[in-house]
Image (cartoon, rainbow, N blue to C red; front, side, top):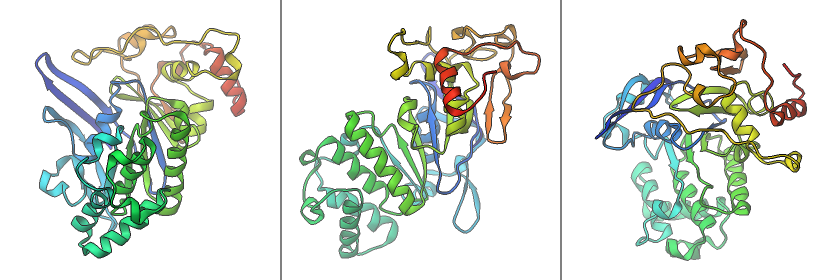
Length: 343
């Protein structure tokens, strides 16, 4: 994805939901995209699948997908007909609420078999055998019996496993997980995360994991992109973003996570609310909520400053002439845990 821009036409005017987003995804890796609700993470991922709402449109940039044969195609330019050979077959998606993803009138087996028959040209017998394998693969016992059951006969966690099985039915190269654990309790959440991690090791699928909860992706992601107000404000390896965060927004997200060291302190909260993207701010969108904002933050959008070969952050605090500031205590503790010196 390179310099992607997405606009929604509303009665109040055009909303710039995604503004110049760029990132890469490598085969077999997990990229987590984190940020508050409304930061643009789900919209960016839906654009990869070509399923933006009717009033949404890509107004700039490209989404380059490299096929098995090495051919590069720009997904942003494909028609709906052209997308049908890619969506579900090469790029699949797991949504937030499994009950709205499943058809309550169809058996689980039929719903898993459908994409196999459509995209792989299998007979019903072959598709049924593969569907049973997938049900077992996602950790559900008695596959033959379960094939004939309906979504309401499964628990929330098992329904999400079924949705993952449907997404994996055609051996996709990219799996997009849009907050797949939000509707589940903590125990089931951990099981689903472990399942995705295990399936990735078995199938080498590349995963984009979207969440508002940094804690969820701590042990799952290889790289993390932090989004705010339609932009990526920091991106790096999981260790770099967790243990050496550089953008004040990332500091706020990490500082607001409860841990065993915060028992005698008030939990940090990011003040204010995200900006209205009907009229995007001129400079750094987070400046109005940041106690670390500089004068230039209100005037000019910061570029991506290089922290390391794999770590970049869009904050003027990384400029060589910027004053040195002290991050929240929780961030300093994380830096110590990760072996990073205080700056």
